[in-house]
View (cartoon, rainbow, N blue to C red):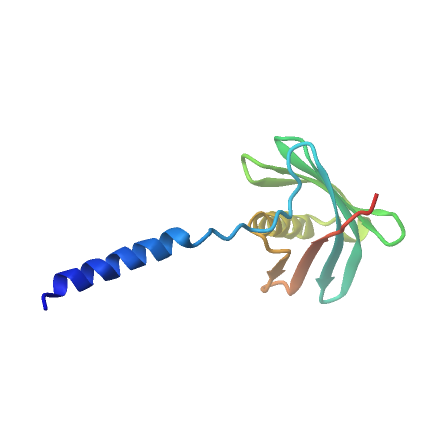
Length: 141
């Protein structure tokens, strides 16, 4: 028997199998344009942690973000430019308001938001031993 019909059968079978596979869609973690999303936030560092609630709003050009600790005090306010992929820190709580900490926060928050756009809720800065976790909260109306 000639190998050509068998090869054609295998190629057609492989093609049908590939066409039947549905693409895996990443979970939507960042808010869509005009929406607001709330998160449970944990930022763990070697000398302490920040935990609380984060709120993000997408205005179409940027994400407006604010993280509040358990006492309702604003820990970090920042924006993320969706086109330039840059984070701008507007205010940071006093214990984190040092130029070298702000630089690390900007880079880490940018990496976290890029991870979130791909369906991951965490980012870990291995060099500085800092882990960030933004878990979406489900709000019951």
